[in-house]
Structures are given as structure tokens and as C-alpha cells.
Image (cartoon, rainbow, N blue to C red; front, side, top):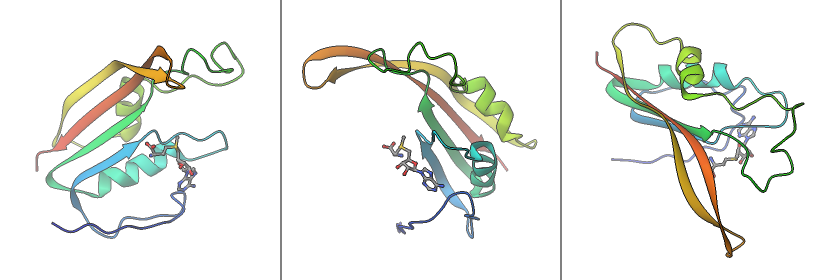
Length: 124
Ligand SMILES: C[S@@+](CC[C@H](N)C(=O)[O-])C[C@H]1O[C@@H](n2cnc3c(N)ncnc32)[C@H](O)[C@@H]1O
């Protein structure tokens, strides 16, 4: 197994190879950002038999100043992420969930965060 680190602008990145695992973690941006197009390019980087794992925020953390901000579009649900991938036939959904996890906020209070988790596998 080898690992290559690449620092690049995802808005212009094009995959040049295919991998057994392609993963995207919390790829959100407050600026205009072609997230769905980038994820579709990530789909094209998955080798036959490989997987794409997309983890994201399911909502703002309860202590966020944005938690009641109706001006900000909601984070996509796992179903919306799945639909945006526009997968061809030959893929199966292995996980499609909202998952809660408890973290320490500033090393003190327990807060519950919600993540979206989508894992799909290319079967052929
Ligand atoms: C919410 S952070 C998540 C970071 C990391 N994946 C993690 O899970 O901790 C979003 C990241 O996307 C990066 N980012 C924003 N726009 C980008 C772009 N056009 N190309 C590459 N990275 C970008 C930001 O610099 C930031 O590090």
C-alpha cells in the first residue's frame, strides 16, 4: 500500500488514478464551493470493488452561533448526498445514516454532534 499527499484546490482537481477507498470528511465551505461536482469526481476515482465514504456535518453543533441561523442553507442529508453522486448502476449503498457522537466542548461540557455518513461500494 502506498500513500500520496497532495495539496491542491479541489475545485480544479481531477483524479488521475483509481483507489480502493476514497473518502471525504467534513468537506463544507462557507464560500461558494462546487461540493457536489467534487464528490462526483471522487466517485470516478473509485476502483472496481472499491468504496467511497462521505462523512459530513448533519447540523451545526448546539453551541454554534449559526445553530438558529435560517439564512444558512442546511447541511445535506445522507439521502441528498447520495442523490447528488448520481451513481451509475453497479454501486451499492452500504451505509446511509445520521450518527450522533458525544464530544467534550472545550474540555468541559458534553455536547452531541450529528454527522452524516454515506458509504457506497462499486461492485463492478
Ligand atoms: C471543515 S474542514 C474539514 C477538514 C478535515 N477534512 C477534517 O475532517 O478535519 C474543511 C476543509 O476544506 C478545506 N477547503 C476549503 N476549500 C477548499 C478547496 N477549494 N480545495 C481544497 N480544500 C478546501 C478547508 O481549508 C478546510 O481545511
